[in-house]
Amino acid sequence: MTKQELAKRYILFIVSLFFAALGVAFTKHGELGVSPISSVPNVMNCKFSAVSMGTWLILWNCVLIAGQIIILRKNFQPIQLLQIPLSFLFGWFTDFGLWIVSAIPTKIYAVRISMVIIGIVILGFGISLAVIANVIMNSGEAFVKAVSDTTHREFGNIKIIFDILNVTMALILSLIFFDFKIVGAREGTVLSALFTGVVVKICTAKLKKPVETVLSGK
Image 1 (tube, rainbow, N blue to C red):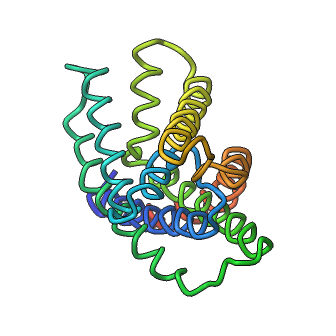
Image 2: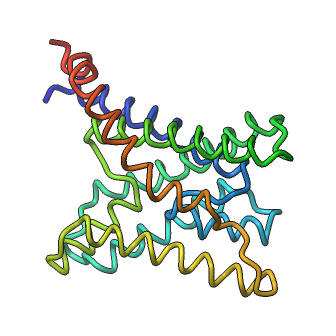
């Protein structure tokens, strides 16, 4: 791989972060829950709203990066520290996305569920670009891979467990912070869990060949 192609791939990854963050912003603004991996930061933001959603995402991603270091120890590759600045970018992009969608009224349930659906599509599109870029994993996926490699269990199975644990933690925090009420993890979270992967598969299948052509310059 040439340096030029590698640079293109990192640029594509940054673009993918923007779209993924915008997808999170859409689902967040719908107030019906976000994707499983963003559920804990979402509940924290609902409770401590003085700290932005993007900042909570940065903090959560840093926790996951620290988790990778603890799990992998000597096997943790220094290049993966790039996840830190990229996590900051994702957080900033999320706050920017929330600013973009802030003017959209969400009093009507149909609008809110539409925001979730649009968010899922945009998020899936962003993730597919990251898959095609194939340079570095986001902290959530990298944490799952660290657990998978260490335990020698299938990545997909660990990912399912990881998502369930994220939602479970979000629900527990919600019950603690909001007097046994569920806040920040609702039907939007379920929809995100069920359909984001489907969107990723469709977008990756459609985009991989033309985007790879642009990246390779062939």
